[in-house]
Every structure is written in C-alpha cells, then in structure tokens.
Image (tube, rainbow, N blue to C red; front, side, top):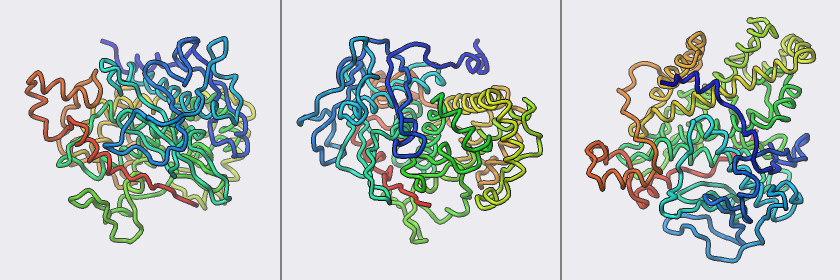
Length: 475
C-alpha cells in the first residue's frame, strides 16, 4: 500500500497545459501590476470559448443584480457579454488585460488553477459536480454585490470599493476566488452536517480552511515566492501579501492569517437555535472571527515547518524565532533577526525558496488528508487539531509535533477530551449526490447517519445560508 509520505514525495505542478495570465494579488498593489503566466491542467485546445471545459463555464452576466440564493439558482438566463476565446494555439494568455474577456478568463483560470493544486494534494479529482446529470458549474465574474460566494453549481463574485475610493472586482482577486474554491473542496470532501449536528466551530472551520486554501494556493505563483522572500527578508511573520488574505489595498485586507486571536476572546460568541450568530459584546462577530484562532495556529505550524527547514539547511540559527511576538514587537525589534535573514537570503535564495515550497506542500497535503478523515457532524476544533497532528506524524513531521501542539494550545484549542471522532463520509461521489444514491440503495450506514448529513438541496440551503458573507476587517 502506498504510504502517505510516498504520495507527498510525488506532489508536483502541472508540467503542461493551457496558459492563462493571473494576478497573484490585486493589480492595484505595488509590485503586482502585471499578471503571471500559469498553466492549468486541461490540454491546449480542450477549453472552449467562455472559458468552458465541459465541467465549468464562465457566464459573464450583464447587470446581474442579485447573487444566487435558493431557490434562485443557475443556470443564468439573461444577457451575457461576449465570451473569452482561446487563441489559435488553444491558450488564453493573449487576451488583453482590462477587457471583459480577461475578467472571464481570469476567473476561470483562478478556479481551475486552485483546483489543480488541491487535486494534486488529494491525489484525485474533486467531484464537486455531478457529470452523470450533465451538471455544469457556472462561474459568474461580476454581480452587483459587495462580496463573493460559492454554492451548489456556481461560484460568483462581486466587487468592493476600498477606503481610497477605488473599485476592485473580486474576479481579479485570486485570494477571494481561491477562498470560494476552498468551500467547494470542503463541501465535496466532508459533506454537510444536518442542522441538529451543526456546530459553530464547523462554520468557522470552513472559513479558516478556505483561507488556508487561498494562502497555500498563492504560494504556487513562482515569481511570488521570490518576491515574498525579498519583501520579508525571509521572516514570514512580518505583515506581507501572504498572510493578508484577500488583500484590498496596502492597508486593508479581509483577514490576517498571522493573527494573535485566542479562543477566550470569542468565548461569548454562539449560535441561536435558529442559526443566527449572537455576540453579547456588541461587535457583531461571526464565523469569520471565530475562524481566526484556527487560522493562526495552522499558519504558525506552516512557519514552524519553514523555519525548521531553514535551520536544517544552515540558513539561520535555531534560536532565531519570532513566534509569539506581537506585531508591534516585530516592527520594533527585528533588526538582528532581519540582518541574519537578509544576509542569508542574499547568498542562498534558492534554499530559502526550497524551504518555503517544502512547508507549503507539507501543509497543503496534511490539510487535504485531514479533511478526508473528518466528519462534519458535531465537529470541534479539537477534532481537527488531533487529526491534523496524526497526519503530520505519518508524513515525517513527528519531530515537530510538540511545537505544533503548542501552537494549537496557545490559541486555546484543546487537544484532550475531544469526543470520539466519527468515521468520515464515503468518497468518490459528489457531496449531495452520494447521499441520495446510498439511501436509494438502502445502505445501512447512510441511514444511520441521516441525521448528520444532508441529502437534499433545500436542507443544504438552510445550512449554507448560515455562512455569513460580511467579512471585511480593516487595520
């Protein structure tokens, strides 16, 4: 049987495929004004105008004023802009930046690029649609809406005016799109809990892990790896484009992965029986805020792996570690640390990037395996943390387990006393279709778990409607 670490050794990028140009960060930011050419898995000539690849189609709707919400669902029936078309060579990298067609191509390319990355970590195709029914996922690049979301059969994006008064379409924000793809990955791999089995931590987990999908995916832009090392001097705790998820300007972002939030800070936050978030503090916090401790712990673990890689490569001494510093301390006390890092970077750029790629792939792979082992029913952060540590031990990270565990504990995420984990749902079928199929067959395990996993769109819509989409955070 193939061991987990053998699968990890086999992870690599798409060697050949159709070219698209994508912005790794929003183009208004300094240093990101030019898109990077990437390749996605479908071969040149296999993606039609739209873009449309047989599974996903971009529909650039004209003046779509409302986002999809059950029962208003795809397909879009109104007028649409002219689709993006491939060049004679089958690639989409010739489309002028700033055109409507580039907007469409950028959205498709971002979704497909993210799926390629995570299907690589999963080691399989992610079945988030039902090809047997001729089901096609619809990608809508612009809705008159200050947000973005994913649901059954669609991903659609709106836009936002930042504090400087500049409009930013989310279809050009790779972080935002990758975050929404993250939701589809989790829906596919874990299923959806029934209302009685839903926990606040499951909703927050979904937001946290979708942020990590965006963060890890961003590290697959080759030129950005190099720029990240330059920008930080190798110290990834300095506020930078990587840990500012969904960045909107040089001083704004949707969430910060390198945060200091503790579970105690959110102890009063809860869900009402009707599914509304109740925040006695009056701050109107929700799942995105409750996600922050988990995101921070996983980010700290990624940096643990990265810094361990730097030490193993002899690039920094083992005692040069800024974990636990607050942002003000980092800003005022990094002279020695930065000097050591920057000097090492100048002489060993390739080794720094290798350490970052190693940390990226170990983290992405561990997350993918962890999700496949978790049940969404009655889920807690302790379930996730313990499973994540088990996976890390299996892929050769046993030496870092103590540090990983401390990172969870420092956020108030317990590692003991968690309820016995339920077995994960079966694999290999779309997240709604598989339950209908099993119950039609009279499968006893599916019947036993019918209170915990959804099997119809209306029930799904009830739970999905609890994913709050108002998530802006400003420094």
